[in-house]
Image (cartoon, rainbow, N blue to C red; front, side):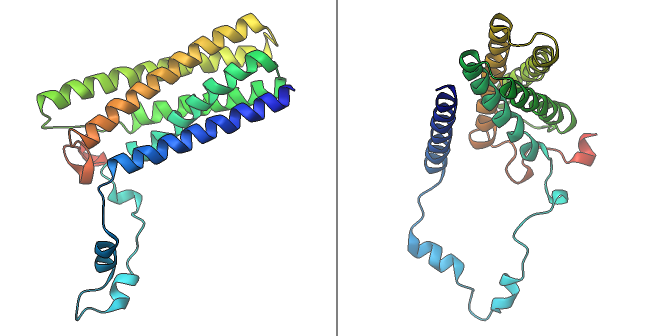
Length: 213
């Protein structure tokens, strides 16, 4: 029964995430007719087909002005997953689940620290609204780092010292839920910076790694 509850909850969470991602992509993408796509894919007259087909589609790391967007998605996913699993753990109290949650939140803290400290984008020439949004984004990102670190320490204690104590697991769940809330808010303001305030696309208002350090 406990295993069925775990797998059912995990399946529902996966469906929810995939559906949210699909809606996000559909709402942010501009409608493009199939005729335009076909026309864009066709090479211009007089140009060789081999010249376009030989181009490397995947950009190298050096081409990104900042590695923040490549790193930041890992703590988002891991913290949301860890919070969900910790809620399930309150009902199943499974030792193997403790290890999965501990590894998830530990890796989430490393990812959050890397995204917020090592690869934090250095923005410049921002509008007043963009500065306010950036301030909110940085605040919730900082809360994410601290709360994920606290959750990792608590889960470490849970795994090795305070084993299978529901009261202690509730405390871990509270910290993880706060961390999940913080990273969700940081992600919201980060998306607002990019898609509404125009900070980041094609390196706009963002310094490169060499310039930022």
